[in-house]
Image (cartoon, rainbow, N blue to C red):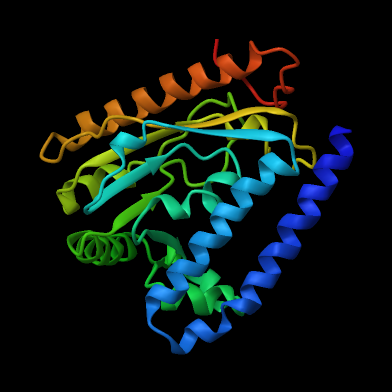
Length: 252
C-alpha cells in the first residue's frame, strides 16, 4: 500500500508541476500578482496531495511567528517538500538561487518574473556582496527572504552544516530572522521514492530580532533549529508505525 500510494503521489507531483509550468505561461505578460497566485495554488495542491494521495499528514506549527513585513526565513533543509509546499504561506517570498537555474526553460523565466535573487557561486565575495545588496532592497520592500543556511538538503538526523553567509545577511539586512524546524526528511527523503505515512511537521520558531551580534544570532539560530528539529524527528519516531530513519550519521 505504501508503495502504491508513493507511486501515485510521485506521478501526480511531476505531472501536476509540469502542467502548472505550462498553465503559467500567460503570466509572463500579466502583472506579477497573477504568477504569485498561480504558484500559491500549486503549493497548496502539492501539500493537499501529499496527504490525500501519499498518506502523509502535514502539520504547520508556530504560524503566529510568520512575518507580515520584511524578514529572513532561515529553514532547516531535509527535503524537496519545504521548497515547493510552503510558498503560499508568505505574501511575496524571494529566494536566493543559483544563477544557472535561470537558464532552465519555463522555470528560469518565472524566476525572473517573480524577481528572485540569482547568485554566481564562482564569483566569491563579490557575488555575496551583490546578493546581500539585492536582498536588502527586496526585504526593504516588505518581502520575506527564504534561505536554507546549510545550502543543500541533508538527511534527517545528519550532523548540521550551517554556512556563515546567513550571519552576513543578518548584519547587512537589519531584519528579524525567523528559524524554521522540520522533520520532512523522514517522509520525503532526498533521492527517496517512498512516502511513509505519519505526520510531517514544519514549525516556525520565535524570531531573532535585528541588531544583535551576528555571530551570537547565528549560534542561536543554529541551536534553536537543531533542537526543535531533533524534537520533531523524535516525535515522529515515537509514533505507532514510525517512518524509517534515513541511513545517515546521527548525533549522539
